[in-house]
Amino acid sequence: ATPTALLVGTGRGAQLGILIKGPQVLESTRRVDTIVLDKTGTVTTGQMTLVAVVPTGALSEDELLGFAAAAEAGSEHPIARAIVSGARDRIAVLPTAESFQSADGLGVQAVVDGRTVLVGRPQWLTDHAAIAFPPELAHSLAACENQGQTSVAVAWDGVARGILAVADTVKDTSAAAITEFRRLGLTPVLLTGDNETVARSVGTLVGIDDVRAGVLPAEKAEVIRALQAEGRVVAMVGDGVNDAVALATADLGIAMGTGTDVAIEASDLTLIRSDLVAAADAIRLSRRTLGTIK
Ligand code: ADP
Ligand code: MG
Image (tube, rainbow, N blue to C red; front, side):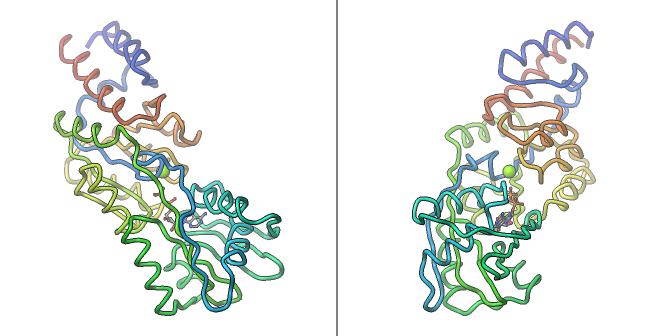
């Protein structure tokens, strides 16, 4: 393709709400055959709300929620924001936390009123602090997950104290965008750190059957490399800090405009309106731009 044609393509992209890092990007866009989609904030809105508070034993809901929210106050994660804002709605004064630490893709730890509080994936609490889950808590976890809710466990002083569930919503345009990807000959793959049950329920809603769940931030790029090793040309769409390495590894990295700066910097394209339909537009545009000129 001539440089002029590529520049025209880039200008047309801007009109469609797609920021293209350089004209050469259109070349790799054209060859893509697989599109890997991050779940939270990409296929879903990422605006989570607190939907369940389940304490164990004699603990009250507000005590469980207050400790968890204090520990989450230092985290930017959508789950953390949902817990903190849910707690602010119900509790007048939240306790404060010290020594906040975050384990990317797993959970958080902080000291609240002298107690070491953990909030995160149940498996992480078990691996990290040998937390055991009584059967009724394991049952509540499964019940929330079966409804497509992401549930996190809360523990302090070495004992499981309860679970909190948050719910996200699929964006209005996601299912239509995935239909459009298939029409363009692209195979969609859903990639998430969230659990299998929740990931599958989102996959079913939008029409994706290849679902890779429970993937740690560091492993997301490995999933991309494995697909490339099968000979596929891979686009990845994401928004989070945890997606940045995968976005840079993909043949074509696509960031959501609402995404974090690191995700945008690691990508070749940015979708200004954070709408997946624009990703399909970008692929169609590059094929048209390069196809007609050659
Ligand atoms: P995604 O790939 O969907 O963006 P992440 O990799 O960010 O998900 O997180 C994966 C899982 O790790 C979450 O579903 C949750 O169980 C746990 N997790 C991550 N951060 C937090 C946090 N701040 N509080 C509680 N749990 C968390
Ligand atoms: Mg995300």
